Image (cartoon, rainbow, N blue to C red):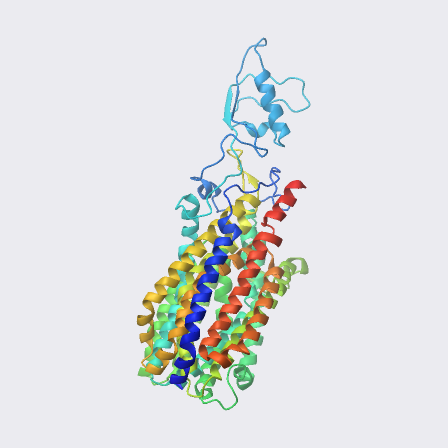
Length: 610
């Protein structure tokens, strides 16, 4: 069977590799947000509000001055391209000429700015109001009118913008790296059992649990967005409401999910395993133990999103690192020292999840991010509506995603009864996930930074306006370019490390069957860089329904591919279907950023004209 897998997959794999490489380069070279000129459309310039008039809160901990501090501004230009320069108003006697002062004030009013915004805090006497006849002042005021909109390069410059995003992203990258790395550790120890069926059973049960769990993953995404907005407004009450309501909804959903897997394990596993499949003997006990991890896993994810919404990404990293190190240590002890086998791996994971959830609850209480009184109080519909409204839209996406992954798992399990194809697929998935953690972390950065950056505001000290659509688009463009370049770099690195990654399995047949899928997994990182970050932008903009519809279309394409390609190309056909899935998601991101999203050029031009 392994010979058949190799014989079917290798020639097709070469052609697919070449085709997707050329397609990815072509898409990237024509991508408007990545390749557009440095002259970016301007917003309406309404003081204190975004172009759509819906924002007006402060940015909280997110320091805009450091985001744009080192970029080059169009100094001396206003919204309409006219020279503004520095305005100097000199004190004089009654007979002194005040024409320059009058012109400065008129120029400011003409461009929708209050003359008082031109004064520094050191002003000793204020300008007369617009209704006053006199425009003279007996104080010498020199202030430079700073441009609130700056052009920045779309490509990484390692400037203040890059440094700020890197500071936020690095803990996220490390945090996201832990889970697949721990998954790789679990896979390593299960592989040490030397039983392909054990690997297939553990992989199937893990896929079922992950799919059931991620069906409710709308909670972290919506929670992070709500917490981010509340934190930007400095509203502790709204922040507590967002976290408390997410925990309440998560508790109810977790009880249902755990009960479903405990009551009907065979039916749940039938989504990926055929009736009577040999791997069931390993999958059922693993799933039974993992079912109890539903609640602590969801609490941990909500906690991570809450901290991320306040731009604290280092605290979740410390919690995740400590709990997963415990998992890695416990794995071999339970599996081999206590001879528990596959169930030992599940028990170690459950223990780590409980430790993580307890740590998040403790720290969130200490930092007053939620209160027990709000947990045990029935939330009002007004408070609950934003969570449920955004969650309902994302729920459609999560169902579509998990339908795809379950279909992939089922098709893979049906390729052979020896477990070789399933074990090879699990190995390729590890390659895919380990390479994608950096890009997924940047997606979470987009989810957090974009809603903050969309808020246009005036600095109380300098009078400088910042934020809004143009500023958010600048950040999005930079993130997309980072995603493209990192996708190329990570894919190349994975290709170089494939010989080492394959050593995680002692079975030669598994290693041989995993070669082409692992190569495709590496190539797909180019698309992942654009897809993950682009979808994070959709979440940050609050365009949950657009994201969901895009995913549904991609799922339909993937299901059609899974029904045809694996019959012709075996396991390689499964991974070709992954390529179809991500290509359609990439098309959805392109449409959002260039045609129908709030940061698309057409939409921004419309907002400006209004």
